[in-house]
Length: 154
Image (cartoon, rainbow, N blue to C red; front, side):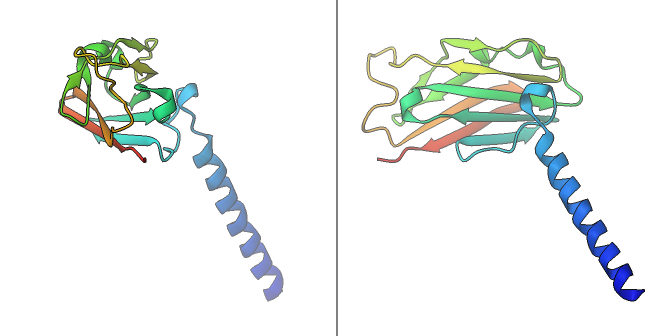
């Protein structure tokens, strides 16, 4: 009897852990649920009741980022990242985006934030000597500046 009860408790605990892992893994940025678990290329910022996640796919992708904003209380449709974002180069120069492609979404919005490949002065934004890049998004949900930094490998 005691052995049967122990097996039942063990099986119940296993089921609870399995269900928890499945439910945590089910949130999908594309389905309007929570932002997916960040990858190593993803940086997040939480503040003003909004979570912003920025993902950079690396040098080969160029200065292009996938950005997701998620909240339960703020209408995100009014935030135009083409006006609010800059990319800061290793030399400290700030470059404005060339495009923010994101459909309206209310409390969840995601899209592609692209920057030109060259600065206005003609130098490459991500060149062979670039050691870091920094995406800055300003004035989203009362947060003056959100900074996302990637250190580049040689």
